[in-house]
Image 1 (cartoon, rainbow, N blue to C red):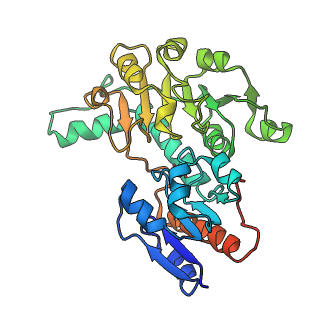
Image 2: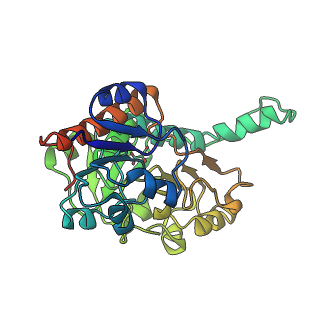
Image 3: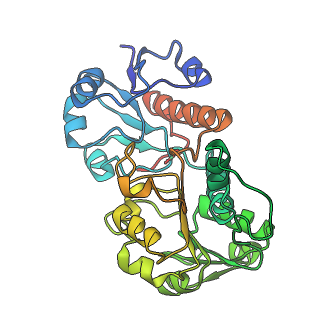
Length: 320
Ligand code: DGY
């Protein structure tokens, strides 16, 4: 029997092209996540499901899909939406899309560094509000980053790519994480391994690249923010709940830290109300991987993963 392949969101055309003739394919035409009931009825009887980051893949999902389910292929590198041990326990393969979004996401992380340190969004808002201005030696001064230190929390592929950009801009790099990187990577990046405490106390810009897990939820809270320099900036392009948004808003409002750049939020698509009036935070709507090239590559890789498992082959980028 032809395999049933379910895709929970619209996909770029080259990814859909790969699915042509691959089986009984159903693709959601929505650009929003399916609600619980829609998802349950869409995935019933599926052999493969291609999911996105706001789809919850848990025991309920597995029950709704049924025992024939072979693979869940997430169109994202992060998979805090997925209960991987539950899938493994039921013999369901799980795949993600590492590698293909590394540069796009690092570009956004570094764009946020420049935007917040040089007050670019604030300047844009000023012009668009028709506020009178004139060039003078004290007008809208930002903070230079050359010679400053970038602290990378989690030196994975995206963290390393962000560090490369920082080096090109004349920054020193320190990093923290569960494991020390190999010597070759440290040498290439000129990166020094430090404790998380030391990183917070010394970095001029702290950039978060660790995955969201029980250990990293609210990793940056009011206490951690107080450990940072009052002149420091926080960048988050990983997952919103790594930062306690209410504590961050308060720290930004009261000058505990100088500024922040956020691509991700605790309760997406909502943004904490207390952040919205603040000029020292740059807010962008989860654009890390949002280029045509990257999203196409992510969709294609996810579909390749799904098809490989359905056909009995090894998926290119397995997690379990
Ligand atoms: C991911 O892949 O985890 C990103 O957040 C999606 O851009």
